[in-house]
Image 1: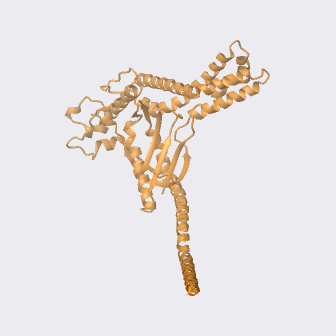
Image 2: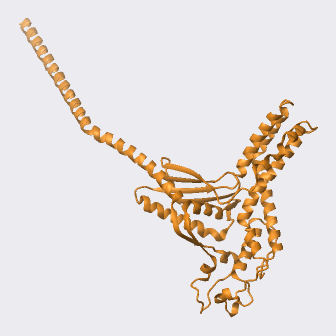
Image 3: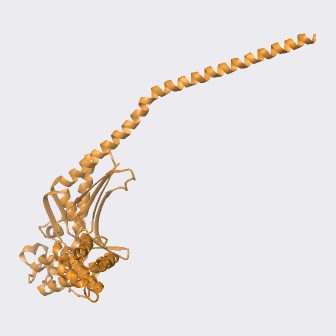
Length: 408
């Protein structure tokens, strides 16, 4: 009896083991079937996944090509007609209104509108950067030529319209143009069109030449460091002082070049000199349609606007103690010469201080190396000086404006 029960229990155990094995076998089949289904799904979805990567790659390459094309068209496309209006009237505090019976449509437009034809975007951007220079002081920006602001605004409108016509709604874009006549100095000019670009935007960058020329030859900056001058300086009783003096002469010469360039932009000497002794009354024949009984005896809008701009430049920008009467009927050459000289000297002083501060530590290090060089190695000293003078020259003459176009 006992043996029968043992046999029965053993039989139950075998059956239970077989049942467990069947469950394990079934689970294995389920797992294999699941893996097969996953593999089939992967085969079906793989082309779509690969296509997404291909689409992203194609979009990136297309954006690169479009960015290059857009930048080329912006730099080379020509506008048949471009115009902007100078705005000296508010700056000068004058009123150029029409009389009731005037035959002119718009007096300010007639006097101050500038029309240009067959100009490339590159030309307009370069001109806009020159006319749009600002001076930053204590966190405040002052325009060097506030009456020319419309040139930049009209140029930005034309570029934005060109980009919209070219790419429509396919891409977002940002166009930037930057120019500093002196690297790191507080006078600069910028143009910005479009929203802030993301970090992964496609970017193209070019440098364009400017319609102004740095007037000082490089040889004049290097002149103090000729073979004889360098040898005599390092063999003098106080070589460091002598070398500092030589670098100072080079800095003044280099600074005078960009000072002259900036002064010509902010103070058009030739044009102002041409107004010398010229009384253009509003009662004259050419401006008769602007006149009225209340304006009799006043100077012309051109003279008034020029005098107002001169006051803004002399007193507002540079803080010079010069009084220019807005009641003048003409502009004397002595006044033009005096103001031109004062602005030029002020610019030279400010730029020299900037260059001196910007390169001071490097100049001190260069002088120390020149003094410690073996007395027979004069060529090595001149190489050291030339490297520092090259850096000074690049500071005062950066060589163009940077144009950046980003799309995404």
